[in-house]
Amino acid sequence: MSKFEKSEWAEKKHAKEFMENADVYILERKRLFKILKSFYRHFLLKSELERSIKVLDLGCGNGALTMELVKEDDEIQATLVDGSSEMLKNARENLKTHSNMDFIHKTFQELLKSESEGDDLLVDKFDLVVSSLAIHHLHLEEKKSFFRYVYNHLNPGGFFLNIDVVKAPVNELESWYRVLWSEWIRENQDTLETKTSFEYLPLQYKNNPDNHPDKLQDQLDALKSVGFQQADCYYKYGIFSVYGGKK
Image (cartoon, rainbow, N blue to C red; front, side, top):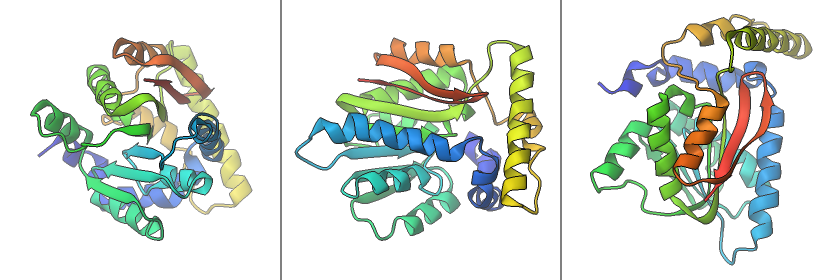
């Protein structure tokens, strides 16, 4: 049994709960999507490629990131990858009206293994690789290998953008960031008048053995070490961040 199959993300119930309630408890999720779309407009749409822009969505979930990008550019060619069959089924359904969409049911570990064995599952090169709330499940050394994988699958001048949780540089900040998250969830629940409370999530996140967040600077350094240029943090709110780089 793989590491992914042992995690909660392999459970249909957990995947379904996330898809139904992510907007309630992912801190500033709509703003994160706005930053993604602004990045796409500025760096990709302005590039004036004489073909469709190719996007790779890693750990795609229900296809939320790709759905946002399609709003900006309905001609993109997207490849969506996820280890959860439930998530991928929903991504297919959500994007069924759009052409040029490929779906691959594989974990990150399987992608890395296929590349190392010379039988890469992804033969294409991409202009943009995106991911959201998935890479923090890898340890730092695994992240470095995965960043190298991403780099190898980008076209020259292509970009990587990751929306994810990161570890604070000191414990005092880490504790406050969880409080900040809880306060935001509470305010959001009051605004949306939700029947279910998710204020327990920040502590559950901290205690979940599947989560391996690393410090933002360590991840930016890892991006630079595999060759990424302009590696930077584009946005940060507590432990939630948007960062990436250019090939």
